[in-house]
Image 1: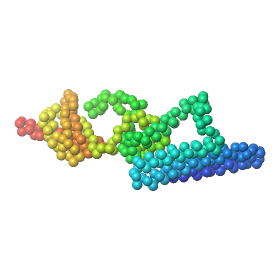
Image 2: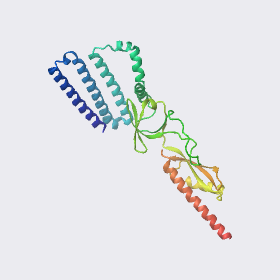
Image 3: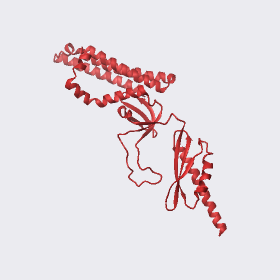
Image 4: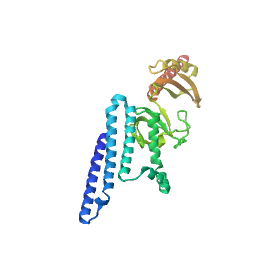
Length: 307
């Protein structure tokens, strides 16, 4: 898909340059505008810049495609990123050489224009250096499933009154698999199967939870139990049933979390295999509901016998 997009961009650039060349040639013939006599070097330099960028992207994509199976997706992505950086630097050096601009003098003669350009491009430069920092320090790898929580969004209080199953604050986060780290963005495919691009300058400041490094996680499950069921009866029975589930790594912890007028809340903390919390939580909830129903039925039968 990405390779086809680059090919399409290359064809578009060739068509645009051909059209521009034709227009300038016609203007030169009809109106005798000496474009090719005075400005042809800039025209050729522009062609080399566009061609160099396209070729760099083609080589980068080819490296990713050819080396992924050999060195892994993460290393292939880092190599591709390094090739893009080197290619863009070489293109810039060739451009300045063709138009006879001394790079050192250009950097030294910044002045007010340099300040304005620096302020205007600080977000772009922040993203580029952020991408270099991510590839160099590799806090996460391409293919990792991560959760990104950024300080820019802060904490939001829920609009509804919190209940036992909700949190007092909502921490914004984005969970998904890292698919690419480019000059400007870190790309992810979220758990909802939606493509997400986060600027690199944000990523290097974000709290990143790596969910693919461990093969287990703690799952916290809460549910209501009627007060007529003694917690000293249900807790040991529930503990025996939960620890026999195939995905449980060690004995769970079961505690009374809080109470209401007619119920109390049990919380189960269990170390479970895998990196997703919803499947084990679902199984724990189903088992807990069955046990509560069984105990209520037994109490009803006992009451009937007594009567």
